[in-house]
Image 1 (cartoon, rainbow, N blue to C red):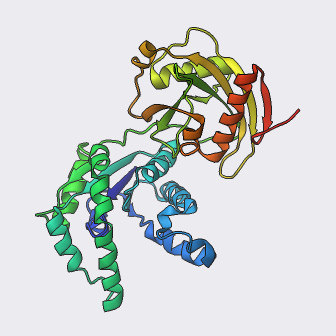
Image 2 (image 1 turned 90 degrees about the vertical axis):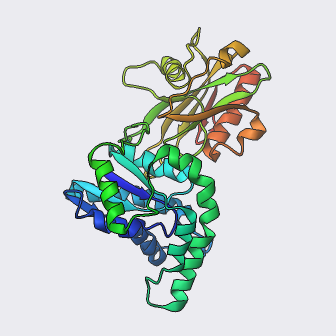
Image 3 (image 1 turned 120 degrees about the vertical axis):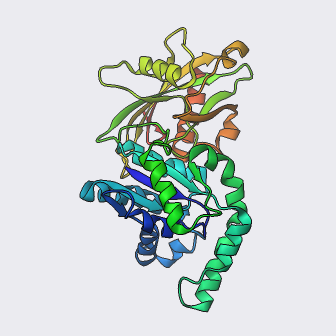
Length: 344
């Protein structure tokens, strides 16, 4: 299990986590700040200069998942992770990666009242260097607007602990009690198995009466996606697409969708790649769209978009696949792609 202690910078996450080690049996502290510090030694200065925060580096998010999983495999028990996550897509990526490894995550949010939080930040002097401490205090204050903006999804996702009137020891006891008695439940994110080899996946394009197509926003990975998923062993790909549409958005397709393209996705570690199929699921009438239902643990939202709008929502590899699928639909043909490029 992982207990992820979230909160804005200066909320007392690290000090609370250190206290928790003595309150939650068989627990180990893992601070992802250590991973960030390691990247400063590993990455070229030019790469580091591209971001203001190492959380914006995909390698940091990937290493946090891999390190946490490796630590749990080594020591077992409970991993205490004090780390600010204010961007929901980063939360999705990290928690989704942990869920794919079948790791139970309890998400706890420390929520001191802002006036008290500012007073605590102003009183911080952790480094014994006046200049460094001043920079840290400034960093904490600068992130308060982002924290306020993130609060709606944070309080909906995490178990909140108001630490306004609590000492560090009292805050730790409140967190420990919530975890141990189940008030801080498992994070409701889809448990998608981590691939161990190449996969076959089927996606379905569903159109509205304005010829826009449907995209869904998964909770377990960054970026939007077509309805669909991995084809199970022994399952016909088109039927897999139909099953995924029913599971994801609650619609039963009346007929087997027509194949638009086959795309071979190149392996890019840690991903294995494989074959990706896109099908034409036809046009949804207004009555159909009114019946759309999303499983909260798997999808956050859905929307109909144009090809141009999709460019800002889909990762490049999926956007290239989409564009060729739309061309195949216009021409009434089936295309064979290799890494997004038509062949044959």
